[in-house]
Amino acid sequence: MDPVGSNLAAPLVVRPSDAARAYRDAEASDGGGDFGSVLTRAVQGVADGAQSAEAKSMQAIAGGGDITDVVTAVSKAELALQTTVTIRDRVVQAYQDIMKMPI
Picture 1 (cartoon, rainbow, N blue to C red):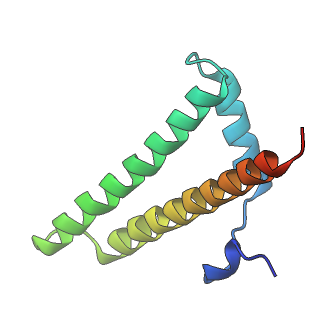
Picture 2: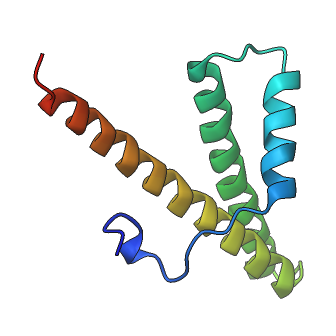
């Protein structure tokens, strides 16, 4: 059992087409392919998803918008946040493992 993913309700499934599109987008970007810029774009994508979910929720509260759109946006934002937390946990664990290595 994976201790990092044990708090998730369902395992994260990445479709090959989504992975290929993300890889293609990362290669085609003019912002550079270094790790920092890729990480910055990924975090910005998570923040944009959260803002979209918040905007759709506010529209629904104000009496407009479709409840299906709200639920979909909130679910996407939740999944993006869970993915980000899982990646963070694994990066921290990898760092700790590296620091334990004898020199």
